[in-house]
Image (tube, rainbow, N blue to C red; front, side, top):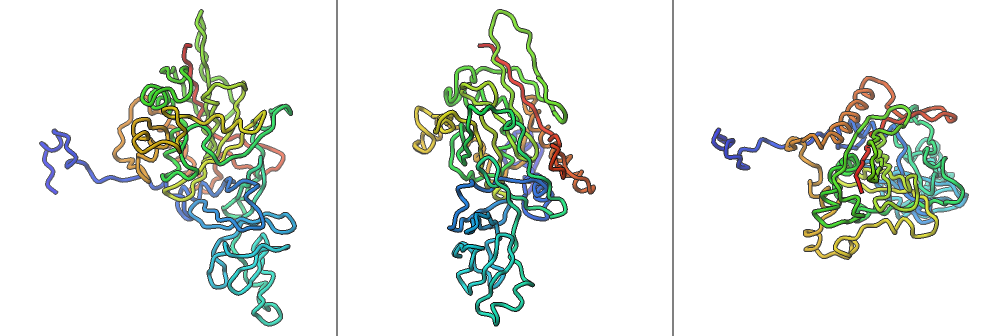
Length: 397
């Protein structure tokens, strides 16, 4: 290529430099910087109801796994590829004490121990020397969480603070649905493109307000006053506008490392406190899904938060309507499977994205230096505070 100054001055695409992504932030496989950081935390990989006597495919952090519940009620999460001859345990049969491979009948318990090798003498004389790769699991809030990192760094799977403050008048319900933004269960782009969206308050009045019409409430369509803070200690009000005769609509959104999001109901519903918390699960480098647990007063409350676009739910829209009335799905997936970070041009309104990337990069540095990342606790009786960004919005009604 022979790019001239004239090409640069004209701004044609021919003058573009080679594009690149920040792979240290986007790649989630074992051995990658972000993959190793994410593996120091527990992640939801399914609903409690997903673990049954029928093997279920699970893909998380680039790994193919099988989820099941044995006859004793114990949940197992094993690597899909059988350690004998490599067929998938998806076709296995769940029994009282484990799962049996369809190919040669090897049986494994929920922690991967080989219990039987029926084609071998005496039921398998070396069965104690092989083990099917497995991961620890814990059931919380109707979700199943997995720890996929080094065993000596397996921290406690704590309850999240919002749940401990709820009254008994409310019940909670887990879901894999995107409660407000619309879109399919599995989103075909990198997880960070969604997580950064959580700390991008200025897209709300544009994308969800004026561009596609009010997708939430008219209050959400106003350009807000915004303050963003890195809250590593006690939570506090980050923005307190001086009130006069007008009313102030005030809401706080939080992004908690590594993947947790706390977003108030955009429809400004009946609860004063947040109604749901969600986790962004990176499936692999180019797809993710969201698990949500929310407090409800009656069945269907979480589904009632879903947005409509031009009067329709996302899945009922035509391709032309998706183009005319885009939402979060279109804006995030429209960046490509993995966005090209080298082509970005930031403004002052993008400081939330810069801060969350810096926070993640700091944790990558900590891990590389042999330190534990923020929010990791090995004490079952104590909760270590997570680092998070707190986004405060204020608009006049």
